[in-house]
Length: 353
Image 1 (spheres, helix red, strand yellow):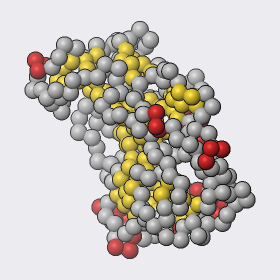
Image 2 (cartoon, rainbow, N blue to C red; image 1 turned 90 degrees about the vertical axis):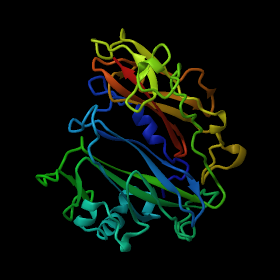
Image 3 (tube, rainbow, N blue to C red; image 1 turned 45 degrees about the vertical axis):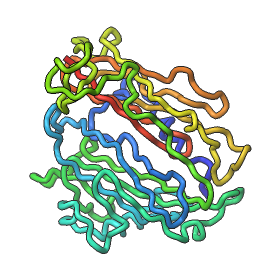
Image 4 (spheres, rainbow, N blue to C red; image 1 turned 30 degrees about the vertical axis):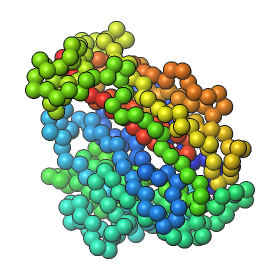
């Protein structure tokens, strides 16, 4: 059986592993799902957790500085307690959920009555956990807290979604609506989120303060022009004052103007890492780490450890964003995760001239 104590550590390892000849993970050059958060990472059977997605469209076909192109986002539930707790064992359940949809449903992003509760569209979705999810789950040796597990799959598409032919690994395609030709990975992202069910165990998402990502926060005053803003700020397209950063011909190099980022994370975020196999004082405190992202410019560090269950809190988990050559507004992201599947994020905009 799958080891219940290891919930979501693999992604954190992947975030900091990057060969020198590859694009840094922090650099957004395609359609990207930065994270999916669940409002109740551990929930009782019968509850209805809500999933929310941080989605960024940085693909070459997008419209930088202009109106964003339409995106198609779908959620696909219905895989409950797969064999060995493995997402790869969800293939039949995933196909059966897609079989509830027609290409017309996918084109219109419309959920038919027969798919209500199993399918949703948009960047958030609520999925009701079956009342008997824990009762139907086999109990692996060493389990101290019985649990159940549901998978919700998602797809984000820079074109239109279509049903895929039988036999393909994922039962949906993303196509250019004009040509009906499949789009590639720059415009099509698929993935899944685990929903853990426990009778009593709970996990909160990291407590991240919004609007406090930058070391020197902007005033966010309403403005019609730069005259309404404080020194070092300028009026953004949404009519609020943003930090002003000088553009840099070296395009993100070490010598370019920098902005320091470090999310403010409440220390209550490091809970006892209780899972199915370890409870109470025997459980260490959670690990937490942060990953940084930007569409333009460059982050000095892609990811940093925030809290180690054995060593405690890091004194410095910041990074510095370096200004790009191209002017305009740039959104800077920080995604904070814990070792039991909790996730939160914050973002701030700066104005480059």
